[in-house]
Length: 409
Ligand SMILES: Nc1ncnc2c1ncn2[C@@H]1O[C@H](COP(=O)(O)OP(=O)(O)OP(=O)(O)O)[C@@H](O)[C@H]1O
Image (cartoon, rainbow, N blue to C red; front, top):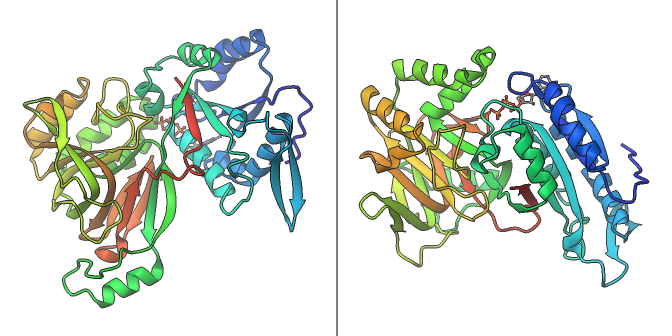
């Protein structure tokens, strides 16, 4: 890309998606964001997305060069060895943790998802990120999308609030969920040993990262809703409501099994607290799940965000910054009941007090659909094969080279 910054301080990268939400981003940028950046003498570099996938491909292609220039602006030397770039601290006074790449996102959750995936895929097998140089990538999420789950979960509901939080400069980790598929040879071995559709091997399968998510992964009614809501974009935020009602009218039950690995906590309605639902020693990497939900599911989601849009809080106790994955499961309920449950979820998460609503905090989830199925991963869709071949794993990994992200809060 060849951005060679000559500024004293590395500029803020502003990613602007003009298509997000009701396409009000340009107006908000001109009226609120730009004046605030100018007034605070914040140098910025504007990246306007022109098509779906643009933010992702931009960062995939450019992140290495951006980080090299960031390192240089922090006084860290880079050298070129054997076709790859490495960075070295030139003085012990330079702490890797002080290097911060700031990205302001004018868009919705889909744009944040693209940036995170672009950066992580652009850094695969890169020697750039090491203990010497592990920069923070801090995102200022300016809510100009439709759902704006990340911003809303941080209680950032206006463009002005987002700008104020950016200028205040405090941040919290934005944990990334790794979504993995089974490595090819693992699937072969398992299906060869497998008569009843369940894994019999004594060796845990090998998983290959497929995508990273920061908002919500879902199956069943929620996934069908997100899928159909795209056709109602002209309605703005109402598009989710309309798509939900459509899918309740034609309500289906979705056959799948869900296995939890490692410690599991379940929300207890009487104490209004989470308590352990498994043996304390349950291991995250194991062939034995610590708990299984056998479905069929009406509604199922795995998420890191407490709010998916203003007021709608299916997992109200989720925290962007911790290492738990929040799971909401509603198994096999009818139209009247799911309407009541979603109505209560839209009243700031009151549904977690209702019968038939299961709310867990887990470390890792494996999902297996009984038939060919569809998963929604941060608004994108994954078609999954039936049975063990299509098994997917979701976990908040602790790998420091993946957990690079923070959000201004
Ligand atoms: N110039 C563009 N024209 C058309 N689509 C674009 C353009 N730039 C980005 N996109 C796509 O727009 C889609 C929607 O963006 P985004 O998800 O950020 O907003 P949203 O769907 O309105 O909000 P949310 O995800 O918070 O509900 C993304 O899939 C993105 O790839």
